[in-house]
Length: 260
Length: 285
Image 1 (spheres, chains in turn red, orange):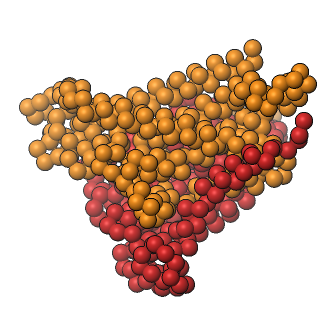
Image 2: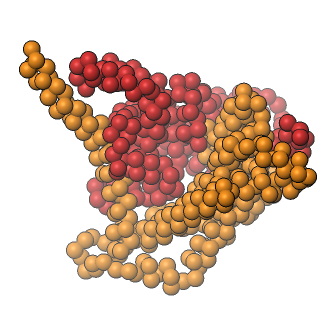
Image 3: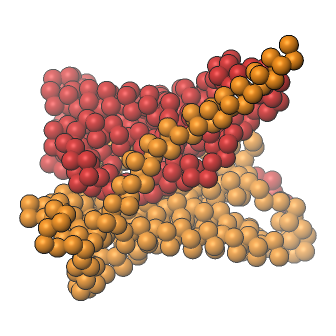
């Protein structure tokens, strides 16, 4: 029997890889095209990137996205870290359901339920705060899973040793647990950051009219017209999330799989 | 000193209980308030009447609870048709994803261990990009071909966005197959296709069902792809929901639609889990 896969399967797999990458390559390529139409190659330019720097709406959207992503992922890291430790050590019954269901549900259902809650129950004006709360809700579970995976790979005896030597739970946490899960927390933070900065669907429902994030800005641009400026901002955003995700997977190798 | 030892132990026991609550309570409370409670409010909202200026009618007003939204849904075949169409699109997307993911997953699973990681990474990487960017890419590709705003564009976008959800579980499944089975079949004279349909395919069913749930469910809830790539006739459940909440402002009907979608999602999740379990038993028998 042949050990390697057959020639036909190689070709089919290559075609699927091309299917995955070709569309994105077109986006990147045309961001350097010296033509307002995304139709044929005219010449090389970085003009669309320069134009981004003067697009006030775009810059404001980027600033909003950045602020929300930093705050949301910081809080999600603290809460998700707690949830990860709790799920590993105390096996609570409700918490895994609460943390993982928002991840598995279609995003639109999370967005709609939060919209109803914010407007009808809290009577909150939609904006930065509502977006922040929503982003923490859906990224908390990702951090929890990454932290729990890290703890599951640990030798339990070091925690027992600390306890036997009389360490208080707080001392054991600070001197042993925290240093051990630090890489997972870093990976979880970065993952939550990319999820927040990329989120479109849930943000779309809870953003209201005042605050625009980067994906919302891209959405309204796509709806109106196709311009290479969208290609340029897309390329930059891809570059950003890609590098963050790669750094994150250095801290915790399974992070990427958690994301998809 | 011994008494002191007992004293600290007692203290540690108390502190241990405190630690347990300190890590369990904050995330649980947060999610109870900002996930479970909102989800339950959708149920309540579906039983209310729409307010005069959108939203829900004020509580304690004329109307209490009503099944009006549900009556409205089942009273007009158009909504059932949209549900049926959404299921059809989700099914078609799932089948195409299986066909495209299989050779890729097979190739990755049969590659040397060192190369596997890279090949998996190459499947995941495009998905580190924003959903809108991936949809926009298809606007660019299909626009010049005059295929934009067609059902074809919707399917292409759906498959593109959800393909890795099929590749990954299928790869994980295929990597566990015992290759000795295939060799034994070959020794007994089974050809390539027979070996595939009689051994590899049935063994891979649990992976396929796992992937099917991961593709089918998000497709049912997707509104951006039909909206940006499809024509006016290609709208699905999620578009209908979005319309109720943001354009029509009939929130009770939107909540009703959301609940029906949730029911559909739970049914699909349940059925695929059941099917995966059965196929696992079948493969082992």
